[in-house]
Length: 562
Image (cartoon, rainbow, N blue to C red; front, side, top):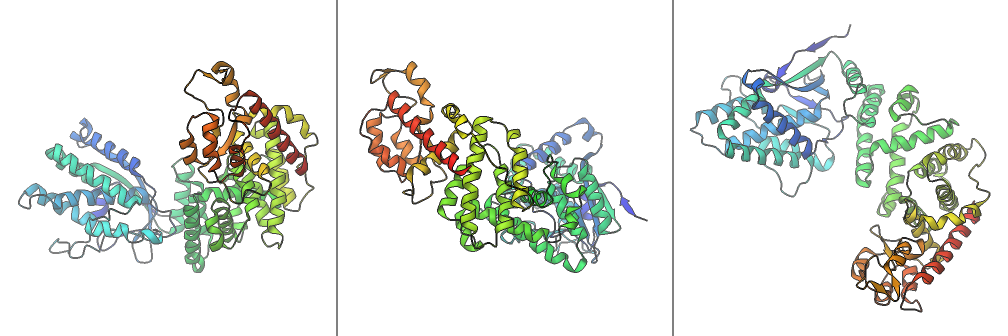
């Protein structure tokens, strides 16, 4: 029979009554995620309570639950609540650090130090003194390599490296600053606040008889709305389903996955989402998407996908390479310039369904000797299909089913379905997309097509969309063209071109003849050509002529690839 020990405790008693033991944050937990905003909320809530009638009447302030079990060393291993426990410890250490700067002869200062010490460190059972400040009441084993010793060092020494920008450092710095400010402005209230935290701020610790029980409670609590990501739940479920001898290996692989995602700007949830479409593809599943947690847990994919963690790592490396060419060498995946050009056009696409297709393609073709050539064909088709469909019907629902079916096709389970017979039918609509969610993608694609291989490098990530005929100019009458007439042409496709941010700032809102000098300095082939334009004026006829040429070029590309 499952045994639970539940007994509400104050912050002071929760830590100080733990003698000869320490709270362990195990390595399979997520890294410390609290930011300064959450710490501000914690501080403000506690401060408000300390000034309230309830606090004066010695009532309690509830700060949440902590789920743990006693590991083989007898230490309570935290399954849920590690974020708040870490933050509480940083807060207590900030109070103690402030007290260290105060008058040693002040009895209140001495008393508060004596009350805080057993909450932060192990104290000698007879003398009641701290003999070893490295023997802290909480230890995190979850930190990534770069942050491994930061938390421990803060609790030991109370000092931080000003160069560090991690959550431990930033939050401790915040607590230290707010403690100092509050102590300066409210010296008596500050002492009271410290006591309020120790005595009246309450935690509900749930100590379980086994890790399995703790993990079950963790999942149950978080299925009911506590703010954990899907991948946090999946991690706990996978860990629980992993045999004892393989758990350490799983923890290391999860850390690897975390670090890849962190370095490339993705969330682990993203990888689970992309991978869900790999599963759907091989299962010929074209049904409506369901919530990520429900998809994995209801279908038991956490257990049935035997190589799940390794394949998630592979997928994360692929997307790191897609987003950042700098990872190509270390991860052994060079995508080629022409493929990167098309991917850059998709970055600004109004939804991420294209990412599902690329994920499925990668997994089914990653070992092919023709990977890059096949990827190029896929990207041309995908770009053409997505752009034409959006021009015809700019909604997500217009592409969902076709994308799901195409993922099944890429998994070798059906026939190709990405066809649009009458591309010309959208030709007249393209001109209306100069100011739309698709305009940036269309403008980048056209610029690459215009270059015909002369564009030898990828556009900068901070590329801007330049209005050739400027939004503002010095005169109300520009070469006989009144603003009222010009305004309707400003946002036309024919008046827009990609341009480096720095050069765009330098070019400003000058007239076309002056801006041509800056256009000539651009690394973008189409902009260079515009810098050689045979006229020094850019008016209605020029915009119309260029727009017609752009649309013809785009439609030709779409028809060739659909």
